[in-house]
Image 1 (cartoon, rainbow over the protein chains, first blue to last red):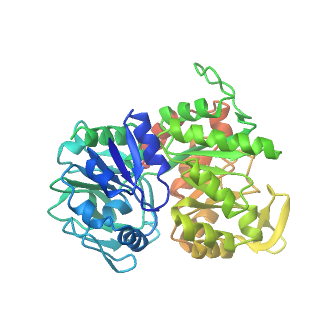
Image 2: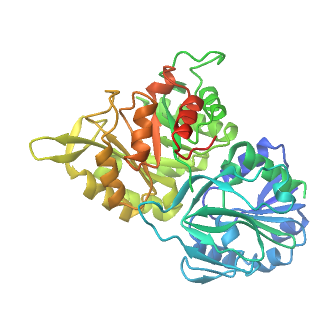
Image 3: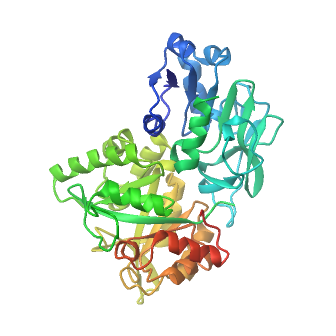
Amino acid sequence: MIAIIDYRTGNLRSVMNALTRLGADYRLTSDPAQIRRAARVLLPGVGNAAEAMANLQCSGLIPTIMELRKPVLGICVGMQVMCRHSAEGDVDCMGIFDTSVEKFEPSPELKVPHTGWNTISNLETRLFKGIAPGSFVYYVHSYFARLCSDTIATTRQGILYSAALRYENFYGVQFHPEKSGDVGERILKNFLEL
Amino acid sequence: MVAKRIIPCLDVRNGRTVKGINFGQLRDVGSAVELGKFYAREGADELMYLDISASLEERRTFTSLVEQIALDISIPFTVGGGISSIDDAARLLDVGADKISLNTAAVSNPSLIDKIAGKYGKQFVVIAIDARFEVEDGLWHVTTHGGHRTTDRELFSWACEAEQRGAGEILFTSMNHDGTRHGYPCEVFAALSEQVTIPIIASGGAGGAEDIADVLTRGHADAALAASIFHYGEISVGELKRRLASQGIPVRI
């Protein structure tokens, strides 16, 4: 069973739909026991990192998440709250990934939010098995994670930043695999098969 | 760098698409889900579904259609048409819409943008602006109700206000160009792109690939939305993207 952590953050429907398309058995849950029992855990998230962190703190789920030894995947803001700190609301986050989250500086060539399809490169780990460097994934975000030793994929939008991160059993992707067509579906499938 | 996006727009009434011929192997062109899948396979980057329902019952049909689209299609899609409250937005978010497009309701009640973006994030809110250039005063006047009513708002200031209130993207249609197939007012798109930092989607006026290439380069638009040229088989999404790529325009192929 795959647990999708429900901590009152935006649209969970698209993640649920993507897992349905993959034929996966999932539960939307905020129950620590159920999360600990799950074979895989997804931490989705859209919207604001500070709010997401506050909701997680309120739910009391942070220790549960940090003690997990099964593969965990944070998506978008779900990945950002697994970093050390986010400039969005100047908030301290879980500190699983050894990097900080900063704001894109907009310019006429660099629209913010970074919205649309961009390429991923420097792909590492089995999360990207069968994915060619230069494949397109769908992004929508205004804040990005800096490159660090946990970076397992990169994207360039003005600067080069972390498209994906990994520390031990924790994975995070800044893009939305659930909205990235066949490429995203393959990445989610890889996660389920890690 | 982020790719320029191509977005087919599907008008939906009572659960069925209202335009569309000439789709070769596609069995049921009236099925909004099947047509959406067809475009996604051809390489559409996103889809836009516009609800042109005339009754409450048809609107309910649209909601269940959105639920089916979200289940079946793995690329982002926006829904628009008749969204006038935070409840409408919540209902569409709950069934899986990635973004909603607001037009008339945002003009008559701008704080709706703040409310929806505040609750669901700016990535969820596309502000559609239909504007008409008036020679008398040299200004772009914002119109509502499908271009039938002229308001006292002006394009550039409204776009900036919408951005400040929490719009994640601007979808701009020139009512002078819409339906003409003579291309887009590229200099206006370029000026708009200077004024706001959020992405701009160009709509209305494309007669072919050249017009779209033009608005994505000279007009600095981030995406192009079109209906007729795809629905009537003028050019396929795949062929359009190959032509854009051959001109050095970054697209997802």
